[in-house]
Amino acid sequence: MTDKTQGAVRVRFAPSPTGYLHVGGARTALFNWLFARCQHGTMILRIEDTDAERNKPELVTGILDGLKWLGVEWDEGPFYQSQRTELYREAASKLLANGSAFLCYCPAEKYAGGDHAEPGQDEEPKGGGARRVTRCSCRDGKPSTPGVKPAVRFKVPLGGATKFTDVVFGETGFANDEIEDFVLLRSGKGDEEFGQSMYQLGVVVDDIDMRITHVIRGADHLSNTPKQVLLYRALGAEPPLFAHVPLILGADKKRLSKRHGATDVNMYRAEGYLPEAFRNFLVLLGWSPGNDDQYLRTSELIERFSLEGVSRTNGVFDQDKLAWFNTQYLQKLPIEELLPEVEAVLKRANLWREEWAAGAAPGPDGRDHAWFSRTVDLLRPRVRLLPDFATWSRAFFSDDFPIEQAARDKFWKDPKVPELLARQADALAALPEWNHDACDHASRAVAEAAGVKAGLLINACRVAIVGQAVAPPLFDTMVALGQERVVTRLRKTLRVN
Image (cartoon, rainbow, N blue to C red; front, side):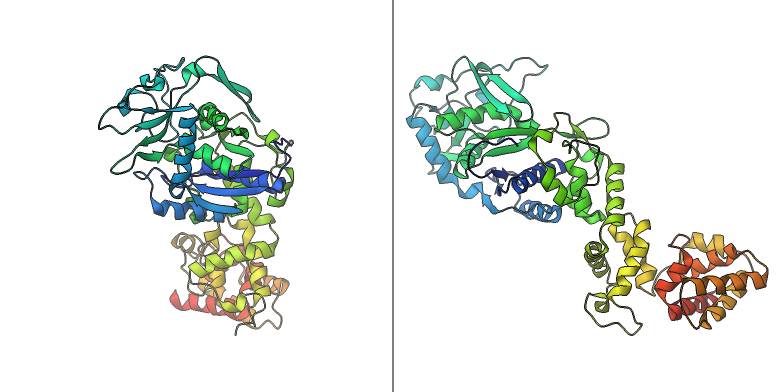
């Protein structure tokens, strides 16, 4: 374990409500949460909403909902930077007083990272190479400009380098001559002397105030870190340990974006992925348990997670791999853990019956929680996404289901089918016991007596009782549906056709 202090581990996830909770942000939140849980520490949720022009309050709800679905539970917060403005202004005043910052009266567009720069953004030279930095002339005490409200800039030391240790990337340094005198507070508007805090100041002041010991975030923030290290030191605080995790790329090895498909975590929720399967998949995009293990329950992830296991290599988001994880969890989860997810799906589709709940009395047809459990267990080997329980499996939970035209055309085209289904309905109705073997023997006896292959009857019967060509084994399906329902559906088919 990499530790920083003798005290407890404190980490934070700090999304900005200028967009949805994307896959990369969700992975960062997950890494923070796993590390906090593994080290018996604290995770803080902080909403970095100082960019009033771009913030959308409704996106905060989406971020919170996405984290809750993912199972990332924070211990403190959410805190909102928009409510902490005075704290940032106090810090800026301290920096002005100790000579680490200065008042700048220059036009905002004159310098990289200017007064109107987007929080957290750096201007990089086109074509690579060292960044060109023009030092602000105000840093040496330029007189104030009448009628112009100043911004507050940090006075970056001349010469030398700012170094820090990153848990993932090791010893890292940036030449100070490549770091601009970055803005801490924007110039004020109206009656205010100063405006909003910029990203660099807000994040450092919050991390100090919240006693953050480890900053775990995406590698795209690596270039922000020297500015923040300078700020920590100027404010008399020891920087936390940094761990910059690799980016997530699409299959084309370019940074994951909308062109690669769904990147909003809530879209995967809507599509019907299990949250634990998504967690398992996501954590392996940039972290390794140290061996080839892939199917890792969350309790095991918490036990085994370490920052030393984080890779420097970017992860690749593979949709097929995610689908594989989901089917693994659908098939392997203890059935009682899967049932609440299926119940929620059926409720949304208006297919749920309260008699299927645990502890409820059986319904008029004898179905109860035990039946619900057995039926879900029968269906799950063929289910790929949770909504399949309400669509592909609809006939198990409702008598109102469609019959696929393709299945009808393929398996009911033989002129013998109506007579075969009529005889099968009579044979099944006469059974004194309803079980797999009894249904099997009765059906095969009907086929044998009619001089046809059993497959002809079996396929036609499957279409009649569940409406499609693909389903669990027929006689297991019959047992799940029950004698009265199977016979009724066979006879209804005859009336319709």
